Amino acid sequence: MVGPKLFFIPLRPLKFKVVKVLDEFNIPFSGLKQGFHSFDFEVNNKFFACFENSEISDGKLKAEIEMERKSVLLLLDIKIHGTVIVMCDRCGDDFEMPLEGNQSLVVKLGNDEGEADEDIIYLSHKDSEINVAHMIYETIILALPYHRKHPDGKCNAEALKKIKLFSSEEIEKPETIDPRWDALKQLKFKKK
Image (cartoon, rainbow, N blue to C red):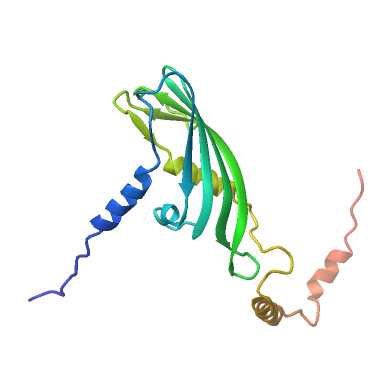
């Protein structure tokens, strides 16, 4: 018996493309002197395409990283600013939203397997560079406001009308009140 034919679609080219895009966010630190160093990165739609299920479909941001190199530490201060394309929570249309955010991170050089700390990123002594793409992405996501909506008056009016129509149809107010609730109105509580 011959089973169904399965088609294998290799994902390697896509993965290679993602790695190549994110390689632009490598910072080689092994040859850097101790002290402060600055790095600038451009973040665009190719960057956001590398992250599955991203809330952001597109954007034009600048990420500025101020790094202090110490003997066994890297202190990173990430600042982002620009605009992103997100979906409006009110009408569902995409819109361009200004965004600013910052985050500070500590990277410890050395393989300390006994230690575990969510505030510190550990790198091996063998590592000579650090990829900051995920750190930049995390800073962007953390900078997104909880409610994302067009400025007042800019929402899709047609969508808002349909939402209002459907929400008013679904809510039916009861004609009569259940008599069991009337008994609760008779309860009196003593104040302490």
